[in-house]
Image (tube, rainbow, N blue to C red; front, side, top):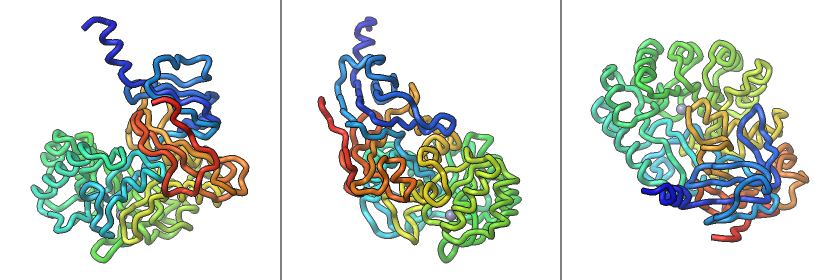
Length: 399
Ligand SMILES: [Zn+2]
């Protein structure tokens, strides 16, 4: 292949988004970028800057953002998928696509535990994890990338099992505590084996979620030392404040706040993390589908709740659900930077909000209006069917 042919192949798709009113990076250290244009080539960000400074020629798709706000696609750090876009938990179809309409472009499974007849023997656990990993890699409802195939720990698992699953593509464990392993000592050993082979871990924190699950208190969480303190605000039943404070202070792991948790405990966690200067550890999830149902706007609702009630600037609260989660979860999405996936959510203040800008409307507790969602350089939806209507919406001017 000549250099010319190689260059042509590389520029097969070129997306230009211009006239961005506010560009949010997802990075807490520098949440707002001084730029109005993004160029993406073959689904990855190639350039960010002022329109006059970047090469916008040869675009295959051009989008006029019409002064709206662009942020990285949101990440839901805690979902319970089962098969495609169906959840048996609430017998609902289309929940992942519906969450995409709430700005979510990436989801992380905390275990496919709602699978009817879920196997609990070791070979069955492994087979199901590998199947889920494969299935969600091949099938992306609404374009959403679901990192699934998250086995829950069952008694009798040995190091070889984690090695085998890692080699097969399994990257994360389901919530420790949802399977048969509930004691800190066994969990710690298995989490260490998983980590050694490159598999991330998360733990159920707090009281039982549904009949059949159990209590995991702060001592078990600290002893297990999973990478993510899953739903530190309970799923739904939270630990006492003193135990949440101890987890913030004594561990350096991610502090995951979920929609389907205790909202008072979420605010307590956030204020504690802020006092300890540990906001970079705060990540967000929905913990849906669950007994509380499915919330297509769940991540937006947590962003708005934390920003408005815990006095967090909206641009920082958005980092919790983007760059923070990406860093803690070792994903390459969630940040606006060259080389990262071109997955974006374009938002504006909702019509008739008391806030005069998008950020102010979030600070006042309103939800953003989504005007467009882009996944890996491709438009997944224009005006969201789920959010309140955005005041301005982007427009595809050339396709
Ligand atoms: Zn849980």
